[in-house]
Amino acid sequence: MKKHNFDIAVFDGDGIGPEIMQCTLQLLDHVCRDCNTFSLSYNSLPAGAAHYEKTGESLPQVSLDAARASNAILLSAMGLPHIRKPDGTEIVPQIDLRMELDLFAGVRPVFTFPGLQVLSDERAAQLDFVLIRESIEGLFAHKDEGVVSNNEEATETLRITRKVSEQLFDFSFRLAQSRAKRLNRPGKLMCIDKANVFRSFWFFREIFYERAAAFPDIETSAMYVDAAAMKMVQSPWDFDVMVTENMFGDILSDLGAGIMGSLGLAPSADIGADNAVFQPCHGSAPDIAGQGIANPAAMILSAAMMLEYLGDNNGCDEAVKCGERLRDAVTRAIAVESGRGRDIGGSANTGLIARTVQDYL
Ligand code: ATP
Image 1 (tube, helix red, strand yellow):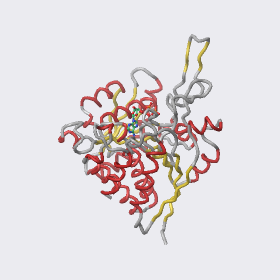
Image 2 (cartoon, helix red, strand yellow):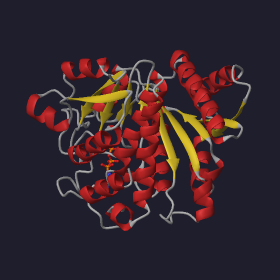
Image 3 (cartoon, rainbow, N blue to C red):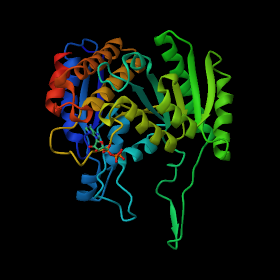
Image 4 (cartoon, protein in one colour):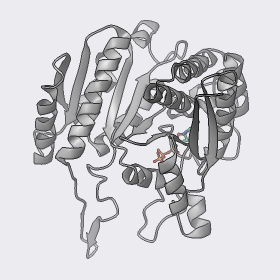
């Protein structure tokens, strides 16, 4: 008898979404096939831009309810540029999910893979940081309420609350502590903001330092977002754990993916008190959809983060180990020709990359 049966809500979404999700589920089944203490079951749920075009609904209530009741949510990519709401904005149920489920912490690990030659081997070995993007407020808090007056003026509102900021910083400090333990080095956390210009960011920074008092083992610092962007390009190996507002995090996480070599390699997790979504940093890549050439690595690495999350939160070491095995297999696959997609200078298609990962499991 398996001790845990984890119910996974699956959104395979739009564009390349179904292509990268299908092979990821096969790899999850493969890596977990001999596990004694847990099993996974999948619940495929409709949502996304194509679904909106068909039904007028981007995130049906039944999908939201099933996602809320699940142990974890696996999401590929949603949104298509040619399908928009009457006000001109894109269909983004992945953002609605974050808001509905209070997934306040967007975790974006940035690291490199041996042999990719984005950096020298020595620098690549040093590069390993995590960007935590606040994901339910900031400039996205009122995303459907922006006002354009008389075609002359547009206004959006940025919102920072004490409650969400405290949750975000406490989560970030704990993540800095667990990394410090795993990497056997002192923990560090940096607040990225624009506190020199905006009162809201001064408030954000003040709460950061207030919460720091509860984590005296973590070294704290703060940096303005413009300086952080420059430093991420000049010396990204100097960062450890960074925490920032939603919009700044949106932009810096794509910069992080660029440092890794491609959006197709960058995984992410959006974590709240009761739910978590695991999805690649990239979008639905409509320019390459249906051709079978999308790189599934970011999706597979996001699934590996999901296994680690399920294991950590349920005292299931076997799930954590499966997550580590999946990540190691992706790392080994990227080092060989048959594991390298076109986005990183190789020629392997989605199926071949997935088979190569499976060979290393
Ligand atoms: P969003 O705003 O929804 O995040 P986006 O506008 O940033 O999306 P993406 O869909 O992420 O755009 O695509 C950006 C570029 O990266 C495109 O050229 C796309 O083909 C490429 N790309 C994204 N994901 C992958 C992938 N998994 N494999 C290969 N190329 C990808």
